[in-house]
Image 1 (cartoon, rainbow, N blue to C red):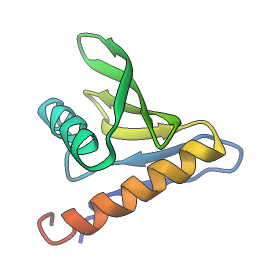
Image 2: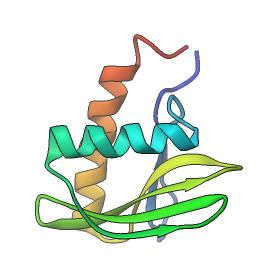
Image 3: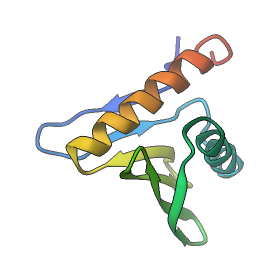
Length: 103
């Protein structure tokens, strides 16, 4: 059974949460819409390239990132302890929503 969401926790490294169930470019847009609807996310900055995206977002007064890399997929990125809490909550929510539909 494949995980819908994968937590990449490495000591002394920023937390990354891979959204395995939604890996493609179009999935990035779906994730943004989900975040807007469920977490009232504000988009602070969009950095779009030909094969990658990095959007800086804000939810619950905390900044974090949603990133896409064509070779890697979509993932949340948190560099602070506050943002780790926020993306962990979002990751757990997505995991619960996706676990019955992804395998």
